[in-house]
Length: 337
Ligand SMILES: Nc1ncnc2c1ncn2[C@@H]1O[C@H](COP(=O)(O)OP(=O)(O)OP(=O)(O)O)[C@@H](O)[C@H]1O
Image 1 (cartoon, rainbow, N blue to C red):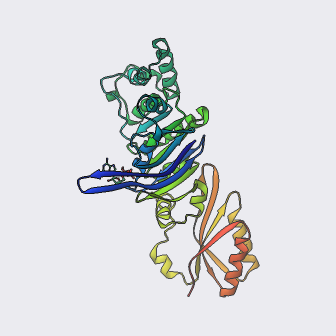
Image 2: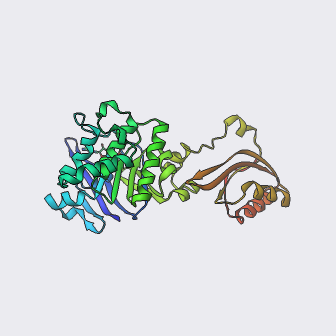
Image 3: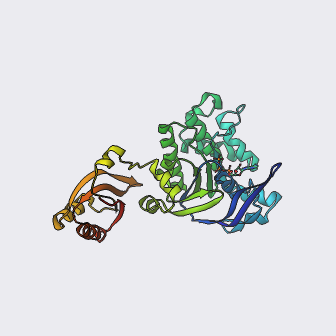
């Protein structure tokens, strides 16, 4: 659906050239919700804005639904852009216009015939749950309601893609959840491909199918959200995950541990505790749970346990292989003394 090929975005500033995006290639599939995470300055906004050519890439191509946008200009680019909606952290509603007029504005700009505007706006407001607010002005709305208006406006011209630039970053956790639920509904019911950028890993965990991590203009890791949570490769990815799932064991407890400390990850519906208790029965190893939980990444369970194992090194190694053979992943954090 979206093919980003060797895209570089450079900015000319008075202090020289700044590279926002550095030779990124990425394919986003039709119907998926794709999340891009990274710290401030990583290049997320630059990359997102290249997708609808709000920023023209310095190099590379962007194809959306088979059309190479980098080859288009003027009216043909404007037409192609109608198929790509966008929402922002700060909503960007027109304060002098009512909710109805804000949404109608997108239709008028696309030269939709007058008689079709009213029913379409009403349909859109119904979809985002704001039918009763059509005559109020943005100043009278909460942040979540403003974002709903922005979503209705972005969907006005039946886009195939919705780009979300930190769409929930200005919202409280409860409102964030309700907006994410709305995005998921739009994705499923209207089959709109969604690309979102965020610095909040919670958002990715909650609704994204696949994700990429950006650092210094590049994509350093990419894959299915579940797989990345289960086995992150890059240090930065691990940092982002630790903001959602923390397995830091207090220093004082670690100092008391003399055994081997291991992290065991169970993917899917494997009964983690059962496998571990079998392991301890079969091997001459004592085990002590330090930490553990089962996280649900979009309804798919991911069990992570941190344990201290005590016994002969050889027995511990055998126990770990035994666990590994039962669909688990084992990582030794600390060998015993
Ligand atoms: N219009 C611009 N002019 C000059 N430099 C820019 C411009 N836009 C972005 N940059 C630079 O490009 C790099 C990437 O910025 P970008 O805004 O894309 O990152 P980001 O990950 O979205 O961060 P943030 O969340 O803070 O916006 C940064 O070094 C930034 O200073």
